[in-house]
Image (cartoon, rainbow, N blue to C red; front, side, top):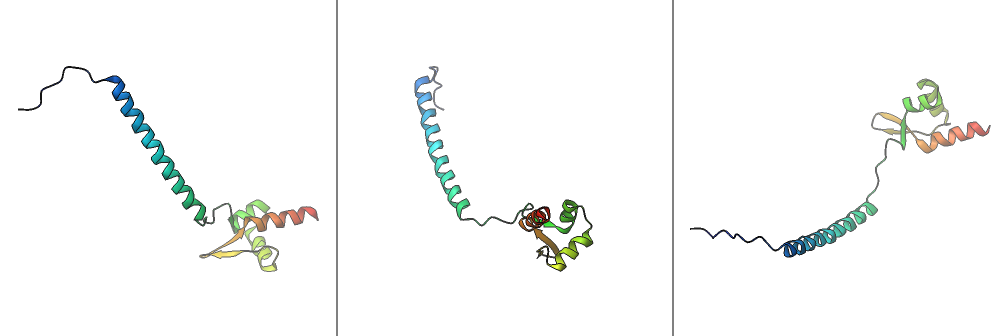
Length: 105
């Protein structure tokens, strides 16, 4: 029929040794994966994030002015902006420089 059932318990020391070897194998494989991930992250171009570009609405909120005033600042060249699709955005660095310049005056 089948194999006979063993009534002797497994050797606990051998089981522990097998588990330790398995843990070490997992650790070394994890280290290899982490190294590969770090290499990929180092060469990947980071996308523009929401904190890098602000919409006209967000700029207006931060400056406590209307959207029309923000558009006027953009038209006058006081604020640089770029188009992202159909949306006009102001780089965070541009807004920070604008605020610093106004505070210094």
